[in-house]
Amino acid sequence: MPIENNFQHDDLSRKNPVERLRSVDLTDVVPPDSPEWGEAMAQYGTSLSQAGVASVVFLHGALHGTDLFGMQRLDEAGGLKRGYSRGVSGVDALLAAMREESNGIPMLPGGLKPPFANDQATKHLLDEQIGDGGNFTEAYVHSFKNAINKNLSQPIACHRLLWSSEHHHLGRALAAVRVLDELHRLCKQQNFEKGHRILIQAHGQAGLVLALASNMLCPSPITGRPKLFSILTAYAEQTNQPALGQTVRRIEALLTTVSPLNGVALDMVTFGTPVRYGWDPSGIGKLLHVTNHRNLRTDGKSWLAKMELPQITMEMPIAWGGDYVQELAVAGSDAVPSTESAKAANKAIWELVEPYDGFERWLECVRRAVRFPSEGRCLLVDYKDSTGSTNPRDHYYGHAVYTRRHALLFNTAQIDRTFYKP
Image (cartoon, rainbow, N blue to C red):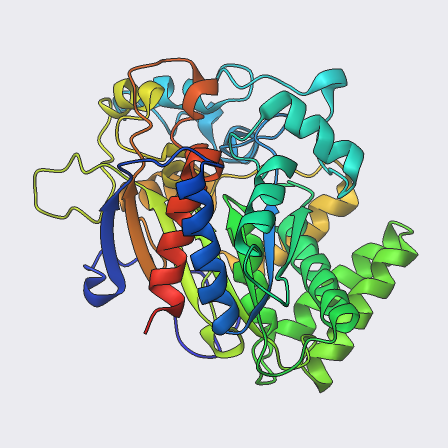
């Protein structure tokens, strides 16, 4: 997408990313916390420190208790009951595999659903119920922190952020504001300044949160920013959330005067993020998108997913082609906000950021089979997570493996090679 993207949707180009793209397999896994693993991680810590990385932030949501594939929007407003899906072979079986009640992903205890709080109690619950499947656990972050700081006199600060996991435009926009507020607070507390870098790693739709944040961080006075913040401020006032309103106004003021990050470069890595919002690279540092992918195509376009019905309904339960959440949770899908005021604000944001809606638009976007946005480096990884198991909790349709502890060293190596090696 162009500089000053101004919240435009990605153009879903099917062209070969060429020099932006690299492909690699996860092989020769070193056991986490072994001496060899610790030594390698310490070396990467030194490399990150030398590049100016002062903090690493892990941003994630929850797979359980959320409308992971965004079927609520398709079912409620997509026209399925009017027969739009008729004549599309296999689509009903695919949609059944995506719905909350039939996709095999259980609810959280007590029926806990978004918005999730970014507190220790919620994070502990996720660690207990989900483990390291699509979840940056406390053990993951703690292990990373200890290993990379082993040889450093000035430790790299490591933080774990849980976003609300509200899979709709309003939820993601509010999360983007809150993430910027957290990063602003981090920079102030740690006295970060120009020359420092923050590396933020985001799993799944948390990457869409960062995409919106990248547009907010545009150094030019883009027209979409005041419009978006006006919607968010009005929503906070209508729903009597003064703290939220203060946060929105604080970040808006910082964005219109100076950088909320005090000149710190913000490097972003996304794991399994669907291609939806466009990115604006002008106000951020480095950008990398990682996707779990196994080539099933016969036309030579190995950088695209394979989207053929009804075959996909046979591949999806064993994650044969890689990450199906990344492939299917595209424009037109979403969770539906629970209140009328939230629905109204969500619609206003939708009109700004995504000109796609309804079943036919969703199917059109899915069939483009795009794995990567138009901006940033691209990494296709065969994480070897398709073992033949049809239990969604073993792979979460190819969407869980990025945060598994056995992949931590591999991911760190790829980030270091892409961003910080000369």
